[in-house]
Image (cartoon, rainbow, N blue to C red; front, side):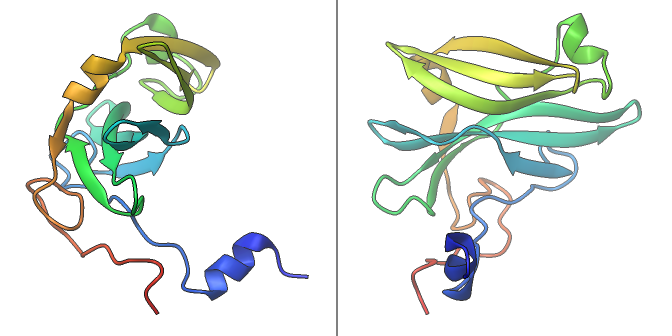
Length: 160
């Protein structure tokens, strides 16, 4: 019996929502979703990790993007800059240094609680005012959700 995901893949496969930007950006080497999207007034807030390769090794930080409420595969906003990066000793030193990696998030009153991996050695909690998180998001100016650096267009996964 095929799994639900396998059946979904047979219907058109996964669709990229967000792609890396050029290597000079804070999220130019790798990106990945972390926490589940959170429903907000303007759509769906997605926290993601971005990686920049530096002379000292990879540097993992957190950014934000906003997905359309009705078409959640469509990116309508993205942070140009990272919103959270490794600062504390347990984030900068560990099995893999310089890592903050969102794993879960909840909205509590007007705060976002972000559960994250730190230095690949601990699970930690960070909080931020929702208004500050939402202020980090800028409207996307291209169909690939890249802001000022477009790549391949995003397609509707329901299209055949």
